[in-house]
Image (cartoon, rainbow, N blue to C red):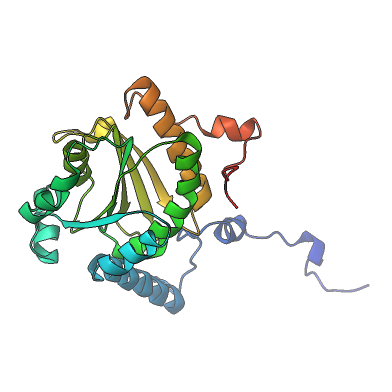
Length: 268
């Protein structure tokens, strides 16, 4: 008779935290080395923190972004906020919410053009996100705009901009609604996340409660097709109900449950 008291392999219970750790990029089940974290996790954290800082401070490639968007068939226009530098932008959020004098002048030829949707692409707190996500998202959105017959006017490329800058752009254009594509504040696992903010009847002074937000648009988050599907649904409801924000709930996923795929039927 064997004296081996070790359990048979079938009786070994896997740590439940290990299963969860494989299912999420969140920092869970990191292990420990004595009273601290393992060296590999300390290094991973330092890398993620550096990537987040880089996302905030990487210079916005406005011309390259405009070229990529123009290649999709959109007219583009570059403006800047009233923030004269990145340092001022980070210290003075209010300056990023309004156009510079030059920016307002650049929009003057389009004043009162009244598009159904004004599109603003803003660097925000992650130019990395705009470089990676803006053009692919607009490529996914374009067939939906055509499907509904919505006009857009020029895509406004905005430097040193925050979400509320879109209200001034939309007001000058007399747009029925404005969608701001902006680089979101980078997290420690998502330095390249794009946010979408939709506001009906934009004008200076709109509050965040009057906007709808679609966040985490990136390869590891919400896909470009799915985000375009959601934005098109929200815009259609916004124009019909004449509102956005807390009074407009995103129920677009009910269509997915009913079997409508997120990819536009006009997409190639």
